[in-house]
Image 1 (tube, rainbow, N blue to C red):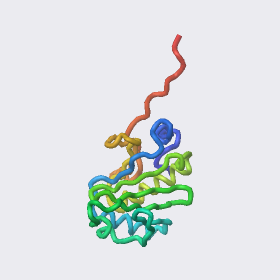
Image 2 (cartoon, rainbow, N blue to C red):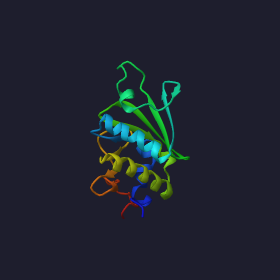
Image 3 (cartoon, rainbow, N blue to C red):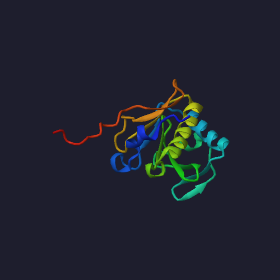
Image 4 (cartoon, rainbow, N blue to C red):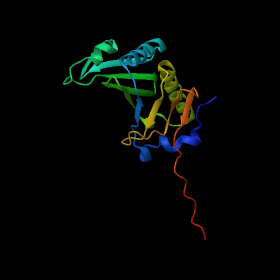
Length: 167
């Protein structure tokens, strides 16, 4: 059974309306949560690539990445939960797991189900919400993994669809 139905959330996946790269985040995170994410990627066998600048390196421990000097380039971890979907995690700070997905890769019910499963896996592992804010509208999540509901839920309503003018 699907967490969300495409027809109920398609508005939030329209790159022309929401921007193509929504802000994905796990708030109130810790170094341990980052490590849990790295462990999850390995356990699920998701293809991944860790890099610092242009240099591709083996995936380090979270504490190593997050203890780098403040002037160091921000490392990123590219994760493919499927061959068609990419999530890019950026190690900005231990307090928040920050990542991007491209809405153009998440069109239709099948891709939505895959995306919800990905968020669910992350949220369950950490016991924390995983939120999606529209691009550039940080702090106003439209959907996310709800820990208590144990599923991805809609957190905002799309605007009403304008019908034909009344006469």
